[in-house]
Image 1 (cartoon, rainbow, N blue to C red):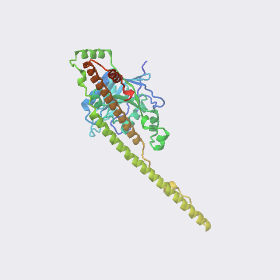
Image 2: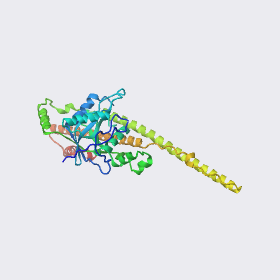
Image 3: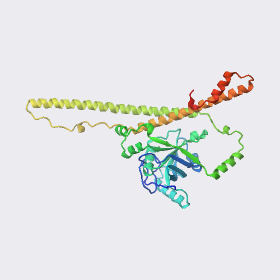
Image 4: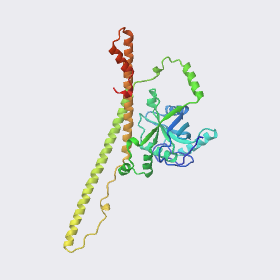
Length: 379
């Protein structure tokens, strides 16, 4: 039996245009193991997300929307979605929460799944990890334990490979976000590292049998002789953009390290001043005691020496996570380039074997080695 769950809450406390989940239900707070092991998305939902970006997305501008569906055991089924409308600062009277409620009410009237299960957002070259996304996903996941955020990369999709990933906040990060304490001590106590801030949930795209039949008929009627002609396999522009983003994030990380080193120097300097002050007070009290005078009254050192405010470490973790994700993208691009390189070598070798009558044993061994190569077998 499919269990349907809705979340409570108002708008998410974030600076983005994404609001929190609207509806009624019980919050579980996302404690313990992940409540979702797999995300199943209808093909129509994927097409709606792609269409939303094509109609309203421009360059680095992101588009966002609401995901609707239901929960079946440990599988989250996303069956519908609708976009957040684009509005400017002049639309001060626009209420996004009320808009979500009206949309879900209208869907319920026409007997369409209307239960809130998360939200989606487009990204620009994989740079989606921001404080706004963290705050928005925390609001969703705190109200609806099974909620996810879908990240759609239109640039990578345009190269012929659909890029759609589902993410959730890890239970450890949920606990830290509840406390709203992002100091270095709190993050160290919670054992929060940039590799374990988000957890990726596997995605399965499912179509109905009627849609599969329609796609099969359209494929038979297609007049395209070679489907590979529609794909752009060039990755130099994609590689350059990702390298530029990685360099920008590394610069931000270095600036953050400078701020943290400044904080450590100021803390050490204040500790020295505090120690010197205590020594002077002790010497003065000894002199007063030798003269038979009462010692000086004790003072609150915390008021005299206010500790410097430590920089928030969450921003550093987010920047490190972006660097980590971009590095994985660059590794995938390099792996694909090696695949294409070895495939090209294999095709050339096949052509040379077809034109040659006598094939040396060494050539046969080379050909077999090239054809049996896999990305994880080394180079």
